[in-house]
Image 1 (cartoon, helix red, strand yellow):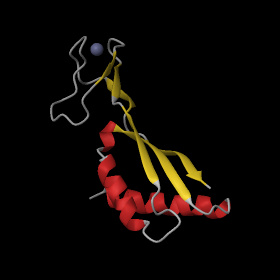
Image 2: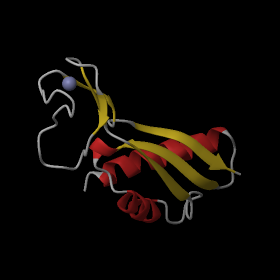
Image 3: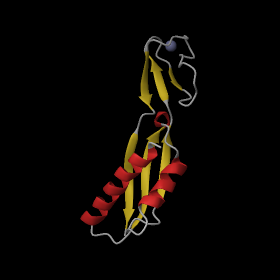
Amino acid sequence: MHEMALVKQLYSIALNHAAQNKAERILAIHLNIGEIRDFEAEWIERYFRYVSKGSIAEGARIRVRSIPAVAECEACGAVFRFDARGSGDIVCPVCARMDRLSLLSGREYSITGIEIC
Ligand SMILES: [Zn+2]
């Protein structure tokens, strides 16, 4: 249920943005969300519909771009994508180490655009 907190925050940011620009409606909100965050786009949309009912954001589309989880192995330099939702340990596919990995992407959460009119 952690999507609900995110949606409330998203909603207030969108409303502020609309007010600052004297917008009449919020048409769409674009998000970048890393795979590791484990947010379900479907739930974000569903909660947003609920939260925004009766406001100028009602009916806004939520467009989620999923950012893949990518790690780099500092031991051998390999850069690889991994399954952020898998339950197993993350292991370098080249040298099989798991102690020198650093995360390059996958933890993102950002609003990349708010469409208003
Ligand atoms: Zn490696």
